[in-house]
Amino acid sequence: MKITATVENATSVADHVWYVPATLDQVVQDATVERLDLPTILAVHEPQFDENEHTLQFDFTSADVLILGGRSHGSLVIQSSIREANAVRVPVKLHGDEVFRNLLKSMAPHIRSAGEDLLSRVRELDPDGEFERHGRRFVNRPDNFVALEPQTRLNEIIVHVRGNVEVHLPPVSTQRGYSAFKVRSPNDLLEAGSALGRARRRS
Image (cartoon, rainbow, N blue to C red):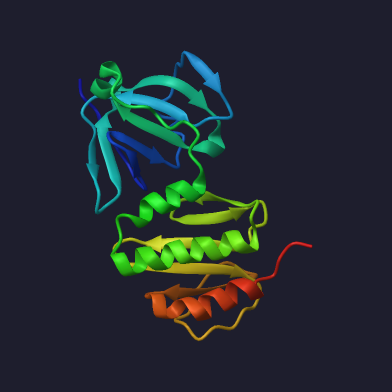
């Protein structure tokens, strides 16, 4: 019997390879290898990826767990036929910055450029940091003074910064202790960059 699973927040990272931030506990039962420093890796038959909705559908019963990874690393889903043909190299060491860049590819060129600029600015401020994906948000770790939240359907990026930071950009409600605003074009980058620089950092 075929049971279709639908996974949200999926991102294409290579031909016939997708990353999802969840560990897919409902699918993962038995695994040949356990590596808590890696993502969980599953091979599935005939997955269907919706680039606009960022959803991945596959037959729940077809999933073959190759590696049981750590919960904080999410999961990689690969197409079984590609795996069997040995035609793809699975990028098991997938960094959050790389996932963010891959997600930007699905957005309009002007906001993709703005997103790259925001990422570069964050890395200038925190060269040793790395984004960690939590749902739609990419949170900088270990100092979570900033999070970037791409809105793929609207072609804008919500920027969350720690502290009461005043900006002349459209405000967004966010969690306590943070300020948030929208970046809609490269024209917003000067103001956004200033806000990043004024975010409260860990001492």
